[in-house]
Amino acid sequence: MNTTAMQRATASVDSSRRKHRLVAVVAGVAIAVLGWLLIEPTMGIDLRGPSLGTGEGQDIGLGLAVAGSLIPSLGAWGLLALLEGFASHPRRVWTILTLVGLVLSLGGPLSGSGIRAGDRLLLVLLHLSVASAVIPLLYRTAKTRREGKLR
Image 1 (cartoon, helix red, strand yellow):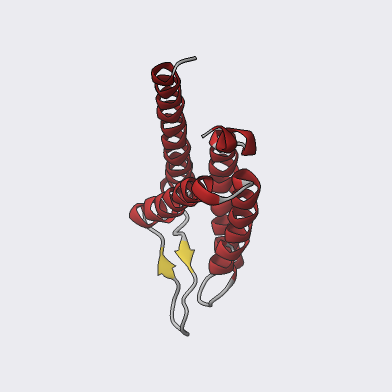
Image 2 (tube, helix red, strand yellow):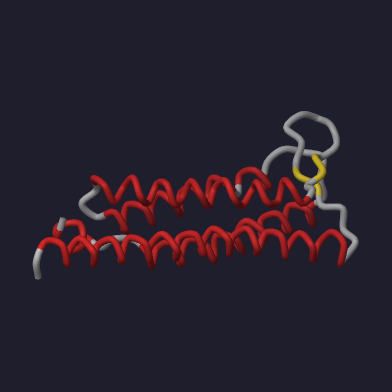
C-alpha cells in the first residue's frame, strides 16, 4: 500500500472514530434528558441535588442535567484522545481512569445535605445510566496498542 492510500485509509478511520465518539456523547446527553423527563414532568418528582451547606438542596433542572452529562462525556472523549497520543495501552488506562472518575462523580449525589434518600438514588441512577452508555461506546472507539504502533 502506498503512502497516499495509507493516509486516506487512516483519515477514514479517524473520521469514523470521531463520528462514533460524537454518537457516544449524544447518547449520554439523550439518556440524561430522557431520565430527567421521566423523573420531573412524567413522575412529578422535584429532583434536588445535595447542598454543600446546611440549606435546602439545589433544584436539578433540565439545563443542569444536560451540562452534567455533556461536560463529563466530552471530558472522557478528550482524555481518550490525549491518552491515544502517548500511552502504550490507551484503552486500558482510559478505562481505569474513567471508572475512577465515575466512582468520584457518585460522591456528588451521595454527599451534602438537604435532599431525600430518593433524590440521592435517582441521581446515582442517572449517573450510572449515562456512564453505561458513554463508557462502552467510547471504549469501542479507542485505539488499540497495535494501532498506535502502526503510526
